[in-house]
Image (tube, rainbow, N blue to C red; front, side, top):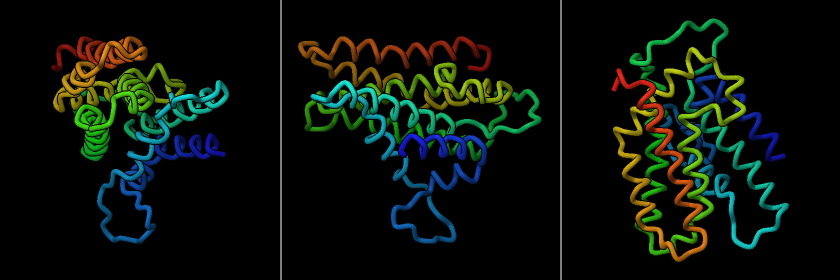
Length: 219
């Protein structure tokens, strides 16, 4: 049932800008507001609950289930930050950004960076955040390298290509590489999970570098 709902949500946020606004302003109280404000409610649920794919002492079946849900949750956020697909779309100039999409992407990256920062400032052991960090590092890479998602077959290349530049530009402006480096610096290499998590943290840094090189004339 959750998989079905996530697939429906992917279809909605990738197809309609109004659905993106509904996701952005979701309120658990379900109260009508004439001018709703952006809220972290939906994004935080995805970041802290659905993208936490590696819980402690979980069975093989549970691990697989959480990985499938985590992959779909990641695709929802990719669709949320992607330009709406149109039947007839001309090749876009990467430097021309839709103000609405810029706000949505910036808000998404802010939520993600806040979550990453919390892992280094929290009094809890980093081990408590391991599953979430795997999901967050993977999400950061996937926002830039949509080829990793099955959405690659759906997204219009004429809009997906400039989207990469816009998202990468915002990530650099918001110091995402430095925040990831701070997370890695706080790792205790004596923990058995540290090496694998360290390798996972390199992927978003490589993705940012790849897009920066691909659009080097624009940076």
